Image (cartoon, rainbow, N blue to C red; front, side, top):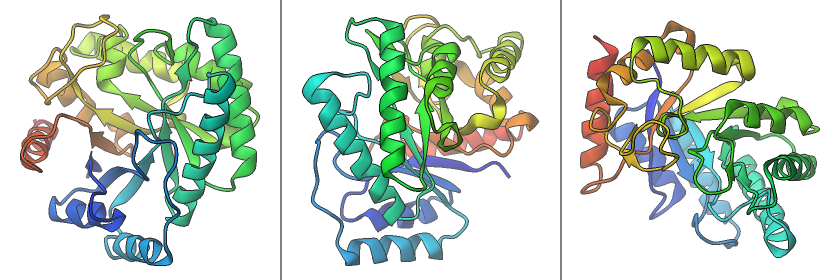
Length: 280
């Protein structure tokens, strides 16, 4: 069975996300490790760690992924670079405390300094952070291409991985909304096959460890990142049916980051849609 999951809140305690995942009968969950819009957070207590690890061990069939904070920009300079290195190092240590194997990271934004310089900076700073930590693998997330963000072409992700000194601890998280907005049209059979053949040729499917399943409010090639409920956007049901039934990707967990509504009402709706498409 495909591992299907949801990004869930850690409000009230990290462990509550795992408990909610069990209630939703999902096989994967993604969480932030602290407030995603702040640089710093107080250290976990022994009780925080113990409660989460116990919940994770109890729900042993649920795979947990972390997502790094939004302020981190490894292509940044000056104070932003310094804070980003410190914050990402801290979050990787937190992931290791919680026995989480993978952390999703937005590669960064070059801020007008140029793509090639931005890629070099990201690779250099990734290498620095990974030497400070021991285990957790960073998954570079494909981006939509808004502004000066890096990672909206597969070649950019591959270049970062090639230039970093710790390739064994780097993988990829593919976001369906982001690649569609970036111009990779996976909405119909021919385009879907072309997109994933290109991904395999440029990066390699063996590097793909997680897929964010999000429909797109905006057209293919818009370079605008706006998530929509599954089947309600411009990708549509067929693109997700192809993804869910692709035997080459059967081992890759899928996690929803679709808009929330009334606690878990929208999550249940989108999960139902995914499960229906998986059986058609």
